[in-house]
Image (cartoon, rainbow, N blue to C red; front, side):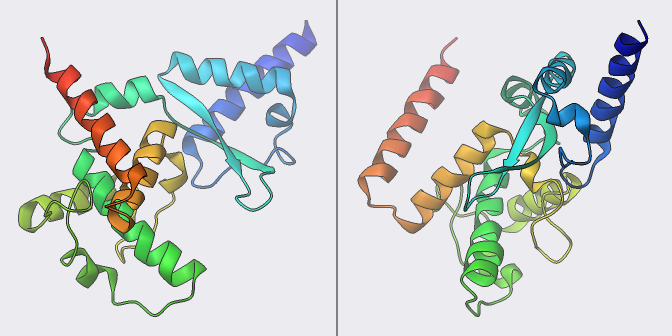
Length: 202
């Protein structure tokens, strides 16, 4: 009985910590996340809240580094109808910030213009439609409110909380931006057009 009560307390504490964390929780420091059975219970609790357990891996080695929580794809899709939630344009702007501040500047070590200047030189939700003026400012405001970017246009603490579907859209946006005439880019555009058409049907 004591063990069950202890496990329940640990699960609740872990869920609360995940929801409040600014950075991933490491399984070495959170035994509930290191134990597969208890980790599954944590995931189920989050699922009941419309959230999901996100695994953070080392991109080079593929090893699990830690865990975060984020909206489930289903909840994120419903929230997308809220004007204060993330929109397609927001992920386009985030793609540009990710490209310039993370890939070009941090990873490749290239000298780049300030992101604020770069944003005005690029084009929108497929990497080719213009996002300017009020639309750009509204997207930046939403990204800052969600802690996806900082005031200096760097990636924010919540960047790793993107759902798998949002992360995939970000990666697709990079393809459309950098390789717009590739076969993969054409496949992405066709898939998006088909999805948009199906969503418009009554």
